[in-house]
Length: 546
Image (cartoon, rainbow, N blue to C red):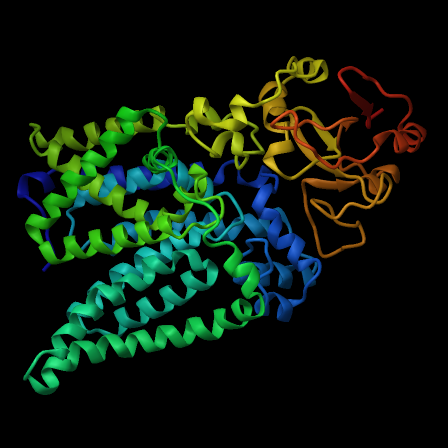
């Protein structure tokens, strides 16, 4: 039976609807307004590296060691085959999934929660830093953040009402989520275990006949369908690359410190008090749900808690990095925010008059936004929102991409550019490394506030395949990458300066990094663009517009 909440809580209905609509619009804006400028970084390159050497058949039948999502890489390969693969096509689907979550998640749970909770839930989803960030990167996490809750709720609905629509939703969502990223399988398969194991014990009891085994038969039927779909999809690549697949498990382990840091990222703040408050509200909200519908409250809690624990003890490579564990737990974050919304709604019910409650809820969510990392990240332009300087840990004191940054000063050229109007100049930076460890451009762009493109030096300065691709690869239509060969022909795409980095920048400073000998390229650049206009701080800067 649907719970409509206390009558007094529902009285300012228009205010709650307005809050939900405004929160949805704000959440969409946070996910979209700088999306078109984002430069592909870190793990986003796994798919590109794979599709450059593999056709669709090879992609769907092999895993390789790099952590690419098979369905997304297949989509990218098809776009590549038609000359359409660009940042916009890689980021767009993830952004749509992130925006869709703002509407889908509240709609899924409307049966058990009243309008105030659903409105606050929408607002918390809108400003959750992890959800905003993962909506802006070409990775499977924004899809699994939608699909796993769909699977969890659909199974609960099907188990209660037996409707084929809910069974179909569970099967499809579970298959897609597991195929996009197998790490989410504990979340989507736990509903089967939660209801299937008691059904098995019940069926094993004496007496009762067919009625006693009916729950078990239901669970086995839907479980078989899911197993067949996942087996057909995942068995070939896992069998073919079993060594690479198994090598990623049992490699690393969580620590108390890393677990807390991941929890703080899920809560969306570097401040311990704020993070603790979110989880306290979530506990209060869960207790309130239990008082109305204890079976569904236990189901939501156990399914998520067991999945969180299973992923935690798996030893997946890099799991002790706060972001890695946190991004695997995005499905659980959706439920944490749901319970926190219920907890805040419960506290607001004590306030009079009721008409003020939506405004106070909005103010509380606004304060949470200001206490999080998004205001500091969202300067314009910031084309490196995915850089681990922002995403490894929200506490700068615990983020090695902040604490181990080389102490050398920002080059004078960038400080000079800061005196010009923001977004009035476009730079081509070359060469580069795609890893955050060796990529200083977020720090530089935070100073100069100008647009950036990445210059690819292959083959003029040597052959590079990591983070680069030959200009002849016409299937790649990247907007923020430009080849030096094209610039030497005069095709500069409106860029103003070419900035050549003679030596690499690296975090930590003593790390080894492959870097081309840029001195061999400078004569060709000199011949095309004339002498450099700046040679300070190991940079050689050329003016591209005369």
